[in-house]
Length: 242
Image 1 (cartoon, rainbow, N blue to C red):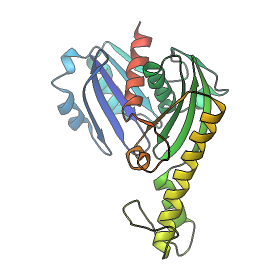
Image 2: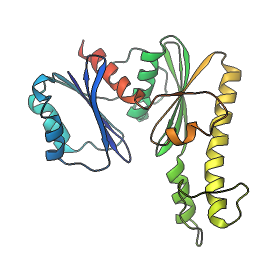
Image 3: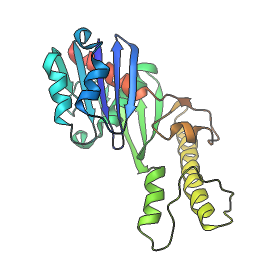
């Protein structure tokens, strides 16, 4: 069995796979060694491979726990073997979450052109064409935009997606909420429109913490795949364990 750690900017996802089948997964913003050990205890004797992907420093207890009883542990990096060509000019700066999502897209849509939209703390737009990762763009996410308007102005309040709004907004809270949400929706719609125009038969995938909220507001049909990153990590783990 395989143990997957996906450590993001705002939360960590842990999953256990039996081959290509996900057995268990959970996401948490804060957890400690004892909590993780309790969750994993029914599976620890069966786990023989693990992968750790992180966009920040990896907590020591995760490394200690993973390397204690697991024969093969892989830390995802620019040195990891990938089943496709990485054409990013600075692979050492490429976020592990982005390359894992690309691996998941390659696993599910092998040989196709895929636009991967990951709506998390930041929104990334990455492009996989056949057997090559072509790169992508990075934009501020929903929460980041709301916080920036509040932090870098003197009087604007902190809005969230829970606030109801009309567009154009009838008050300042509505104006902020409509501006941020509509701005992101327009942005994503235009990315999809441009990619589909330039690259015929493009598959569009959306994932990430805000993807469930945003996908319902898009003008285009997209593949909602919240597990594409952990699927990709499991694929990379198997690929590097060969």
